[in-house]
Image (tube, rainbow, N blue to C red; front, side):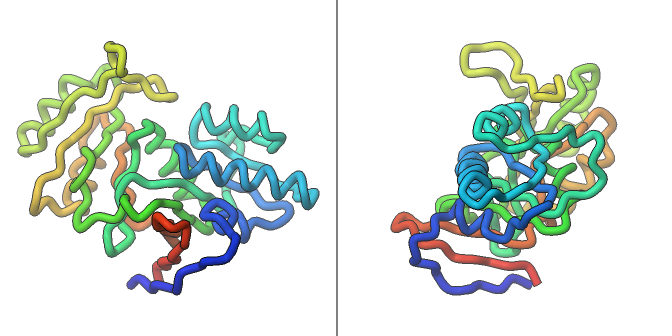
Amino acid sequence: MVTISGMSTHTDTLASMAVAPIGAGMMVGLGTGRAASRAIRALAARAAAEGLSVRCVATSDASAVLARSLGLHVVDFAGVERVDYIFDGADEVDEALRMLKGRGGAMTREKIVARAASRRVYLIDESKLVRRLGEKFPLPVEVLPFAMGAVQAALGRTGLRAAVREEEGGGAYVTDNGCAVLDVALGEGMEPEGVDALLNDTPGVIGHGLFLDEADEVLIENSAGSVERRTRV
């Protein structure tokens, strides 16, 4: 079930609302992408203004570099068992708060950190709301390079069309994990839970961008700058 609270029209921005619950001593997960970068900046501003002491784990090299440049203390997630709070963005969100993520290629690390977090909040603008996942963007699937051909063929046998992602200037796209990405088209009638199970059972798939129950809360910014809060209950 999803509850919807009223619009916030105060001076709080989307980013400041996302970092408001963060308290001293917390271990904070830093998402990846434009919306997450806004929140990283807002957290750094709070830390500087309030003397707020937090430790952070980053879901991408880019987020780690940004956070450290702003004075946040970033630690290696490999030594972390639990995260108190994570904020991140999303590419698509449906009415049930199921999400499609990974246009930035960080979906595997984002999901790992999200699964370790006690509270998970996602920031989007209203253009990311969709009737069904896959409506606007393909589903990113991170694949071990050794298994690329086998995975692409296996998905093809199930009717899923998968294209190898390339860099804008040409050449294969490579994630921070050193893996390739397949962008998979999700057509009408494809149930996300079924696709999720299929991908999880496919050898060579490292991770994918279906986040079906990770979102505890989604903050949605409209074109006027007001923010609506939707919460999973």
